[in-house]
Image 1 (cartoon, rainbow, N blue to C red):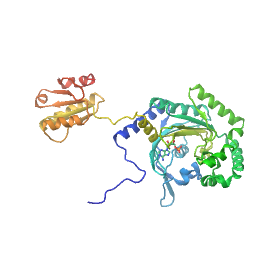
Image 2: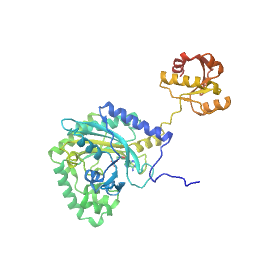
Image 3: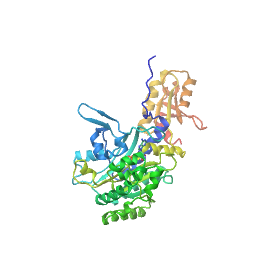
Image 4: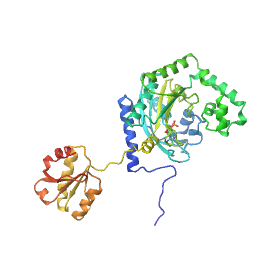
Length: 421
Ligand code: AMP
């Protein structure tokens, strides 16, 4: 025997029940986003490494430590660790934002070289949305309302909390950053190793640190709220007022900075305490400078990304997970002679209804065929013997409830099936 192939670490095959759960989350996002007029965009899995290092920032873990990068003939390429940079690149490439205000959403695999554990994978799925050309904060709160609608549809509204913050506009951000570096530099030796490295590259991220000693130092650090200019303050005040008007509860977390470099003004994160170490189910914010940073014209923009796997896992934890569905109908010819007729019956049911229909395959005695019908999980078996085939009829047997078997003409089959629940 040759050596058995196996999965690459951090990759997963998704089977029936887990997949059914994930697909439900994806479907609810898709229907909700489309109902708000967001258009689907399909983005490539691979981009130039430079897109992510310019767009997301070398100082973030997602880019500096976690990318799957390799050299192609003349350039360095990477599997995408997130969707926003690609989406902005695509909008610039197609010149979609000049004179327009595209609202787009995407779905797909993202790749990060992290230590795999429950809720943390090297290939995972995100749904994201990005709105271009609006300076907000009305669009910021629309994005949050969309996600709230999804939580409500998925029965998760009580389990997920929203944290918000503002990073201010570029001048406010810069002033805060300078004050922060000056303050933290005094304690450099006491900071954890990652934070020491970030002091020069991305000091805002230090506010995110989980290290206890660093957290103590952060408690007294200058807060962005003391550096907001009038425009930044107005944006944040209106953002919060609009959330209240939309009936959305949120907590201000002054240390919420998001892992990525490109945010301005509103930032937000959705968390749960039901998934152990993986608290964050999604996040987003405004990134007014990113289009320009990636070589486009200035264009305000805001968006979010949600981890589909974690949302599905949360439904699973709460006992809400959907299960893979069995076929509705199983068509059994009692001998091979009736097989053609059975195929015709199945085709008729599929054409006349949205029921899923499986046809028995593989020869076998009557008993074995009926056992296969039962094992399929179908609700109804359509049984076709010589008599039924000769008279253009079908016998219906309910497999899950006690109900008397009936024989009906094929023409009446769709209506009998539809009225059978
Ligand atoms: P981020 O782009 O880092 O803001 O991530 C957005 C969301 O994607 C997070 O809130 C998580 O729900 C999810 N996510 C990020 N990394 C992973 C991972 N390695 N495995 C599973 N989900 C992830």
